[in-house]
Each structure stands twice: as C-alpha cells, then as structure tokens.
Length: 317
Ligand code: R5P
Figure 1 (spheres, rainbow, N blue to C red):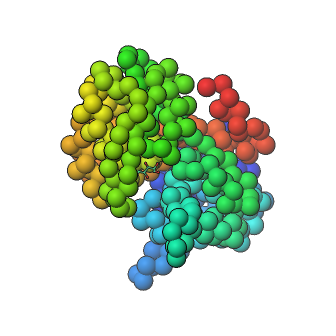
Figure 2: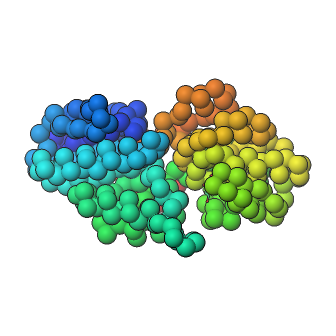
C-alpha cells in the first residue's frame, strides 16, 4: 500500500466497477458505506468507516438514471461533510447534464451550471471529471476542477493498431480540436463532417470536408448518446468511399435508438471508456471495446492526495 490511512475513496452506485478498479490501482479498499433506497424512493447513506480529518473522494458517474445518481452524490458529500472529512473531492467520471451548458434559445435553463452549484453547495472542496463536453464548464465551479481526458487512452489504442491511409474525422464542428489532437497523436490526415441537428435525437451529416475516399477512418467524439452523430457521419463517409471505420469516444451513454443505429451503420469498431458502465443491451454488439480510465483516475487521486501535479500526467504523452 503506497498511501496512508488518511485517504478514503468511496463509491456511489453509479459506477461501482470503476471505483473498485481505481481502488485496486491505489491498493486500498473501497470505503465502507451502506447505501439504501427507502420504499418511497428516498436514498439513505451511512458511512461505515471513520472519516474525521481524512482526505475523502467519492466516485459517482451521473449517468442514467441521472437524477437519482446526482442526488446520491449530493447526499454522499453531505454525509462526508457532517462526518468531519477534512477535504471532499467529488470524482464524477461522466458528468450528466454537461451538454446543457448554454442558453441558446429563450426560456431554457443552464442545467450544467445548476449541477455545478449543487455539488459545491453540498460541500465538495474540489472536483475531478473527464472530458466535460466543453472545457469552459470548469468555470461553472468556484472550486478547483481537475479536468482529465480519455483522449490519450483512446489514441494510444488506435496508434497501436498501426492503421495505414488514416484520416481522423470530427463528426461535427464542436469536436474539431479533439480530432486535431487525435490526428497529432496518430499521424493521420484530418477531415470534418458538417452536421445539422434536426432534434435532440436526430442529426443529419450533410457534408464532409477532407479526404476520405480509399482511406481508413478514425472518428472521435466525447459522447455517444443516441449515436445519431457518429452513425450519420459514418454512413456519409462510407458513401464517399471510406474503407474501415473506427469510432472512439470517451463516454458511451448509448441511449434510446443507439443500439439499433450502431448495428446498422457499417462501423468496424466502437471504442469507449468505462466512465459509464456498459449497458446490457450494448454487450450484444460484438464490435464494442471498452478501455479503462481507472489507472488515470487512480493516479490523479494519488497526486491530489499528495499535493503533486496532475497536469504533468498528460505532459509526456
Ligand atoms: C455534440 O456536441 C457532442 O460532441 C456529441 O457529438 C453528441 O452529443 C452525441 O450525441 P448523439 O450520439 O445523440 O448524436
């Protein structure tokens, strides 16, 4: 064990497998806590370990059911605060509501900001998250945020495949910078798809700018939710003569029609990380590969606990 007893890492019910892997990396047991649901749906948490004066981390992905896991996280933080933890870090590998980050039409909320406020008011001293959809979400918090990325894990996987005639594609304009960094890591050409959003779950890939004919494609995105974005882009580039198509995304939300869409989109491999547990239905897809963020999260937790640099984790990639 390379850490002392002053650190405690707890897990909500949002992603216990990931929490276990993080604690395995840290060589410490997951902190003891009883999490119960009352018959009326209310959650109740009781810590089974002493946390007084300790550096506490609670790992909770706010994936589906989003509101339930969010509330559980808030209760967990309150619980730690009232048990006199010295410092509380909310570790939110997948931050639900991140895409509701602006008022782009009248009479709508900015729920990502509301969630940031809730986590802060509950008593968190700092936050760790991964690929927050937009970098500026860090500014929604008035406490320190360690913003990690799954990009290096994904790009290393694709680099090891030694894909020739490679074009890296951003399936929409918003993701262009991520695609450019991928192309930098992988050494391929860069292309972009122009997408039109028809509704919350419907998109249309309208045009591709860049060279895709006769090329192998790595398409990267932060989130696959209904899979409309990556599937319509995949169909378009296939029509334009692309050969193999690989998709890499940090968060595999796989909601609504995702399974059906991904089954028929002609994608050779879909690679996501374990920020969200893979849904049972998606285990039916033989071309889904899950990479773990646990060593990266564990290393970040260790460094925060020891007051060491977290950004240097990404410097030598
Ligand atoms: C959009 O800005 C995001 O980067 C993703 O492309 C999008 O949220 C994915 O959603 P869906 O899978 O439902 O198209």
